[in-house]
Image (cartoon, helix red, strand yellow):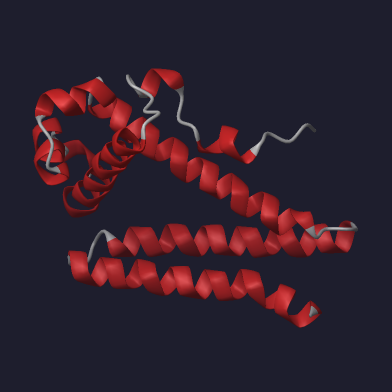
Length: 156
């Protein structure tokens, strides 16, 4: 299997983004847009997401927002692709040290456990207040990072 370069995993699909920024200021604006959208989705859910609210939270004009993303689904698709790319990187990292069937089995079970716990955490987090939900997600991140790093620390 041919590996994709890391930068290929980070780039959203061409149809998701109307304008692919090359200048630092434009990249920062696009990041502000995506950060604002992420915060709004966390607060209200993707169904309630409005382009005008994204623009307001990102502190840009609605016209500027539409230069980067043609519609709400393009924003959501770009965020989903970024999270999927991050998931793939985590999986690749977990599988890098695999040398035999036993190592593959251990990596598989570890990834599966983290995946299921992550899903359960997200389901619980959306039922809580935003503050409690964020705290749950942060606790899960710390726990899963410790779980992933623990085997590496034992090998040192």
